[in-house]
Image (tube, rainbow, N blue to C red; front, top):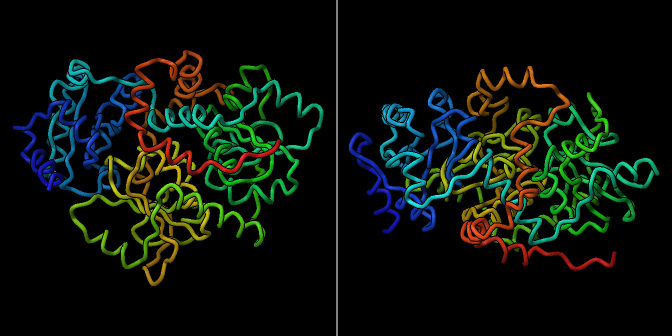
Amino acid sequence: MKGDQHERAFSTPHRNSLHHAAGVREALRAGHEIALLDVREEAPFAAGHPLFAVNLPLGRIEERVAALIPRKNVPVVVYDAGEDLAPRAAELLTELGYSAVSLLQGGLEGWRQSGGEVFIDVNVPSKAFGELVEHVRHTPSLPAEDLHERLRRNEDLVILDARRFSEYTTMSIPQGRSVPGAELALRVRDLAPSPTTTVIVNCAGRTRSLIGAQSLVNAGIPNPVYALRNGTIGWTLAGFELDHGATRTAGAPTAVNHEQARRSALALAQATGVQSITPQALGDLVADTTRTLYRLDVRSPAEYEAGHLAGFRSAPGGQLIQATDEWVGVRHATLVLTDTDGVRAHMTAHWLRQLGWRHVHVLDDWGDLPRTNGAEPAASRGHSTPHQNWLRRHWPPHWPRPTHLCSLIWPAAGFFQSPYTRRVFSNTFSAVAPALRMARPPARGA
């Protein structure tokens, strides 16, 4: 009943509807479904926005909104920073059939004046979560200088790059191998069969290496595991050379190691409250017009293109954790993940639960559900805007991306140590610490 009242409160036409920031914060705290859209371009969005705002520029609404907000009667609150973009966006959303659109009263400044905090960078909840995981779990890490010396001594180690393959092949740590985030737990036992081999996980900055390394610790592998502190950016800033054009990847896991990974991933998912779902129950969720549903295939894009369940989007697991808001526009929606191995979906789901998503399910049995193949339409994949493409074409490949620099600045500036940030983490991720404690593996002797 309370959820129905919440949606009715947002259901008036946008021309007559201004929603106060306090009401948005209350909906977020109460667990009601809501989409808070920032309709500016990415650069001003990254300069400051509410924690759970999703960036959907006005010029991209028509191509991206159907995938980002699939339920048209969900409450949608739109804002800008005084550029007069929000009224036009609300008008367009209404024309596209969204029936509960409202404007944030006062826009971004109204949010500030009401006591709301703003955050810098993109994918902030995921990046903040990575810092929380490191703080709570004491995720092991080492600096670039330490790794460089280990490589010079030819120590027994493997370097696993948790980014997308396209990022890896552009620039990578010497001897690194591409094993995107969700693949790590599935493939690490074959890449480091000796328990004495040191496993080092890197990304470009911090988040994916921290989550990747902690995934392997959670999965209980016996090896020493470290995140490379500040990733390829830290490597570059230390004065070391990166590789360019590397193509090393991981092969298929052996049956024994696959089964061990599957059992471990399932145990973690169950410990953190992930629910299994049957094809029949999935059908019920699809038919439910009162809940927003995201169906996400967390395998690699190549596997997805070769064959996938109809209605499922491609969302490689590591990227889904790193940038959840690029796939999921409605906070407190229902997420159903799937794969074909029983590892990647469960590993991804156990992190999503700890990220604060309450309704996370894994579909293991595809049954007779309809299948299709081919890549997603470009709009669904959230391709870059023309100005972003221009920047990426002209940005020197050995330079760190500007947004990645923020990931380094946060810890260095004591971001997590401020009383306000501690309070935000406590309020936002209140369900995380208990789940992390449940997922903590037995202490290792090393």
